[in-house]
Length: 336
Ligand code: AHR
Image (cartoon, rainbow, N blue to C red; front, side, top):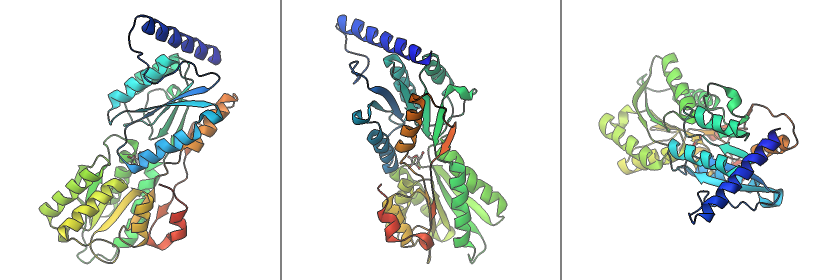
């Protein structure tokens, strides 16, 4: 039944494409080539390319869905706007792709377009960040990170580095990721709950860094100027790009940071260059956010192709790093 539906929507897409071409209009389907032979067509909607991490996720998906393995992957970049992602998903539906993979920029606002995909009989895999929808049958499976667990891991490791603070008050500059994204919500929840649990922890500045280096730098520079570096104990950055920006601001202002003295930095992603900074004690806590999700998604889609059931939720493997559990051999094995 499901296969029949897919074939019908693919046929409709081809007929529509022919009618558009016949009228002399440009194809509305961008790079879609209806002559895909027996390839399984997968549309992949990314929210943007704001970080090296996201480029690593894109590469991981592209490397797994290759023509040699029987797939044609159509990649779309939402340029940091949910509306663009929704348009991209609608294009995939019109094209009659066999599967849709979505990394959603924020958690909410997907019900309508996911209903459209469901009505077209196209299974949707949500990856990286999750969605909050009224009916979970609107998507087939989620593969990605447990962002609450990431945040909890960050906070419990941070406790080890700041327990001996002299004046008794722990002042935190909190640089958030894209507001409303699962990555921001989970990581923010952890630090806000930790502040409630520790009467001497205070968030003294909180702003959205949009997961970018430029915004991370701007927020940290402003915090140093307005609060004074001596009144800041922690920079809690919700990804490595923001941490690099915060580090740049501290370097420019001549502010000390690291495990020995100065501001303690917490960051997420665990890109290779950030792992080196952590191993050398410049970043105190690095929580891994694993972008190598392509093999997990490939595994799921292969199982669906065979008609097998798949788990609704799959969390990718992630670890938490400090200078105590890092060594060059561990970093060398990584690749982003
Ligand atoms: O959703 C994962 C987050 O998004 C990563 O931490 C960040 O680098 C990316 O932009």
